[in-house]
Length: 209
Image (cartoon, rainbow, N blue to C red):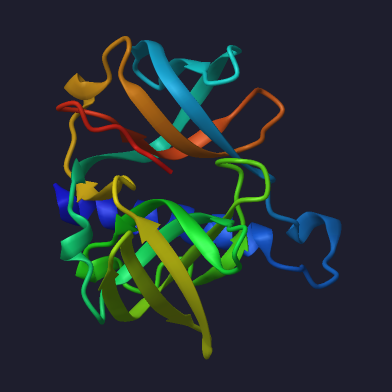
């Protein structure tokens, strides 16, 4: 199951990263669809249609593309973060300089390099997402500080105790029940959001990104 999940998630994360980077001039027919993130809880699911009540209170109808993939997230621990791991960290600038993590996703080894880079993110105002390799991880009094590297650059991010830390886990369509929390990277289409992958919360763990 997880092998089937990975290619679609890699594609989605890479597309999100690409959308956040400055684009070179292209012909209109070459432009990629605008990427949007849907966070909320499932109202209903049937076939290729997923109705979601977003965190903003709006109800949206998401069309699931042919061959769409599904995954969930499982709890991990801050102590699971090791040098060499590939992680996705949403963070905010901190008052004393540097960044403070809002959440951490530890990618499975097969997804190393997915969407590598640091770019704007919409989890909170002024937040960013950094997909990078852990260079070192140092435990301190108030949590852990990691140095991550991407494209020859380095960034230090503090991870306070209590920060959600998760990894990718399998899921089935039976997990798409009313009330389940989802994170959906989707394309903006004329008929509404079009999704190639869905992350769903299960066993009390919700997608924190």
